[in-house]
Image (cartoon, rainbow, N blue to C red; front, side, top):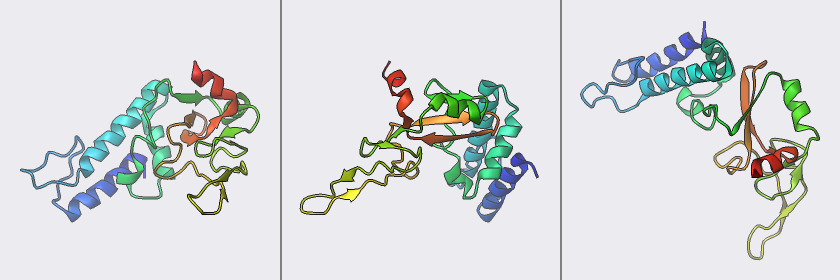
Length: 181
């Protein structure tokens, strides 16, 4: 089953539980009976996969297939700007993972929570002690790039074409001076 077929089946199942109203071009609201916007998410996802294909010189179906292979939770939560951002200047694109690692250089990343230097691009291991409030004990920072506040707007989204995959990581120290420009 292709990524398109898998996603379409998921959306159709949700639509059939409600108003049986699947429309691949987006929700048409059926006289305001449709409130779930499952079809809008389907259209957004297909449009975003096509955007990736165009910007990266890839087949959009391959992009969607890779997303669907990795998706392990509800598509309404998986497909969103933070997981599949538009390919713009703030997204770093590499042909290979090896090229990305070489470009990063030393495994040093800025934790957006404590400002310390972590050896992990995903979870702070800086050892920096964070205050827990008035009269409370300090604890070692263990901030994680995932979650609601994740990178706090201070990370970077990297995409490796050889893996057809992208993710947000803490800002590599070697890239900080470039970001300031």
